[in-house]
Amino acid sequence: MSSKWWQKAVIYQIYPKSFQDSNGDGIGDLRGIISRLDYLEELGINAVWLSPVCRSPQKDNGYDISDYQDIEPIFGTLDDMEELMREAKKRNIRIIMDLVLNHSSDQHRWFLEAKKSKDNPYHDYYVWKDGVEGVPPNDMRGVFGGSCWEWVPELQQYYFHQFVPEQPDLNWENPKLRQELYDMINWWIDKGAGGFRLDVIDQIAKEPDKGITANGPKLHEYFRELSKNTFQRGDYVTVGEAWSATIERAPLYSNPDGSEFSMVFQFEHIGLDQQEGKEKWDLAPLPFVKLKEVLGKWQTELYGKGWNSLFWDNHDLPRIVSRWGNDKEYRIESAKMLATVLHGMQGTPYIYQGEELGMTNVQYDIDEYNDVEIKNMYKERLTAGYSKEEIMKSIYAKGRDNARTPMQWDDSKNAGFTKGTPWLKVNPNYTDINVKAQRNDPDSVFSYYKALVKLRKEHEVFVDGTFKMYLPEDENIFAYERKNGNERMVVICNFYGTEIMCPLMDEVKGMDLILTNYKDTEEAGKLRPYEARLYIK
Ligand code: TEU
Ligand code: CA
Image 1 (cartoon, rainbow, N blue to C red):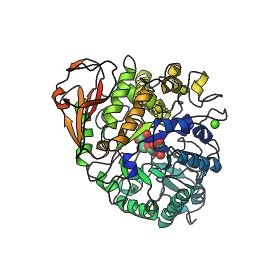
Image 2: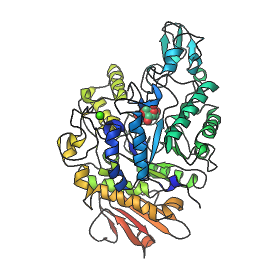
Image 3: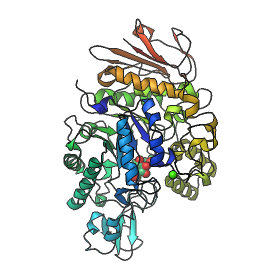
Image 4: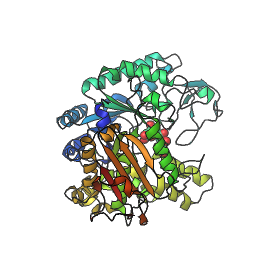
């Protein structure tokens, strides 16, 4: 199998606001990232997915873009961005930009024009509906609460928005709009971007009249046109974020013929620990056997037909060690175990900033949170009669700010993230959990991630091996085999905190134990709490 660079790569996600502040305003910025490139090089990653840094009023932390061809001043300048791309390149790190093409900010010049009159040339760049004040065209609800329709009295029209009202949806039906987006992407390609992550790309072909948001009939037609006019100019990695992508659709997104994107970024495994048919805030215990079924299905059914992203965390998700690991007695063991399970599978692994340290969730007072999703949900649920206690429990478990607390660099004030006041409070555990404490410790979570990243480069079986799940019904063990013509890899993990017997020792006879999260020699038949073992021969 001839593999593409991004199939062998590990991608590191940076949430710029929270990574490193360079000028003391409490907000992470591009110069801060440049100053930390050596750290990323040491970790061994090949590309950085940078959450949006374009000009933005920050109603949704940059996912509301008011100018796609300029940098938001809180993050720096276009020169800083170009310097970041150059400096990253020197270290063989590509910069993946986050393209928000489903919607813009309401402060984008297109929208300001569009609002002026119905016959303004930009009017049709957005989705409008004539109507009467107070009677929205239909009852569609936004992802962050409230109606999807916002009234503009001057026009006697509603516009459509799937996220907050300050994020009006772009109208992909309009060929001029599409061309503007392609021109903008090509401009970034010329500036040196190494790839693109495409935000909620499954929602661009909406048809609000029919109540359709994700997976509109023209979706893949748009993908192919977009790809042909931009990404196919070179060897760029493209990642389609799609909460709605099913295993049936994924081969389209990531067709090896390159007609759409390099890979799909789907969430089937992420939606499991919530009550069925309800919201993410409606918590339920993780169905472990189901988790294995879902992850295993994506391994076997996409094999040879497409390419998947491997992730536990991102800027929208809680910290995995607090979620499915144990962030108390077994924080280090469980962080390493979860990394082993994930990185051994087929797909491109993502490390979200701080995951490589085993950073944890937080529990703040409601006023200390920043995220618009948290704030809106809090108000909505209070009105709906939920108790404050219940709501806070959901926020502690699933709030997006869990992932957005500043990166923990050292044990000095504010974790070395800023000399000023951080825009979001630093997790108080930074004195224990930080880069400085882990970087030179061979037993740290950081060193373990580093080892995993390195292994992927040394063994082709990570990239092209077939997948077989062991013990699919077992309530504790996550174990599988990867195999190609030359090598065999076996991963055996205890997903929980109790010691158990391991019935798989015959499978690994004569194999080399390449990586494990327990120091002392292997106790043949037992798996200790969160024990992880990776064998190769
Ligand atoms: O997220 C997609 C999305 O639908 C999320 O809003 C998701 O449902 C939610 O975070 C779950 O809590 C992307 C970005 O990753 C996110 O940060 C943006 O807020 C969103 O799109 C809008 O651009
Ligand atoms: Ca700053």
